[in-house]
Image 1 (cartoon, rainbow, N blue to C red):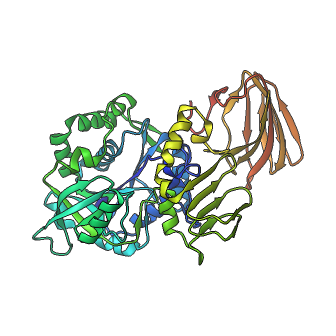
Image 2: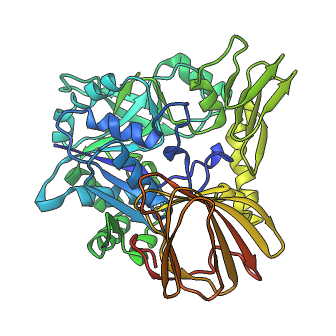
Image 3: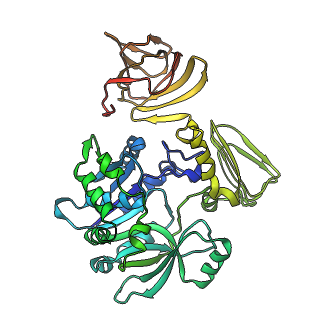
Length: 474
């Protein structure tokens, strides 16, 4: 049996301003398709024979969106583990492995990042099903991508000797891991045909991995074991115990295990893989016009060559440019040379130091009950567009510093205001004074849409006291 462990705790900061901490790239349909990268990953593993429902390791800030996307495609899951703080891939993989070993089982663990693209799912599934003799022998397998260009944005793995006895699969010892090279080195790696891109995908027997981890990094295993044993269930989620998990070293599985173990094996793959980790790599996998441009949204191009132009909310017109990344969202615009697209994280780090909201959230913010979008903000007022999903309800809550005016523009709302309970239809409104307990609910079968006007001395999202909440939020 194979238990997929899907790593969905990343932020994708090199794809800012589209990817942000509260809505990262794996939850977006980046390639103009109906499904997000996260959903495509789940669908990919569901097509592999002999796989159990996946374990998902997720950041708690977007847990409801991840669960909703799983429900949309009808994929059953084992557990959704919530990290209170990202500690890199080794603690996440360890926690996922522990969760997969229920009732004393010792399955094979297939570790996949949630934000990667694979074009040939059938070939990938075939490769997974051919390596059972290696995992049975205690091998910890990493999948190396056969390079088709001198890429400086990926780490590399050098193949060692071919492993004898691997009857169905082409498997090699791992000679050495290499960090991201400069262009000249990348060219030499490609020419030698001895190097593979490090994909961050793994397959191993659960007990074999934990045994090696206990030998090479026992502090990680002990912290994760404590955190999982003390975990609490919260609705559909499993909250890893905060103190023990955050005590884990912040380290990748490559550094903690793969570069030290004598049991590593690498299997070459040519499956149309990309980590979609930067705007340049997204540009590489997008469809292009005759001038090698890729574009999304309302875009007008004239005399433009080898550019990626993305528009979220308005017309973006480009004239006489080449080799540029231009990304427009409602609250931010990025302009970068293609060559520097790997360095977008530098901008993100500066925004974090300035405590800019644009690094964390979009103007449209998703909640388990729906979403809201800021339309206008000024001194002592804020205007929002609120959408409540059918059958969903906001918490019973109160604000200390602001009053709210609600105008229904579509659907029917059930309102609790103090001791009153009543319905509002389209074009009807109500006023919620500060200090009044209130709740908004959509009893209908279509989305409820309304305009909210806030007024008061403080309009921050943290001015809220919850008394009841169906989603378990404090």
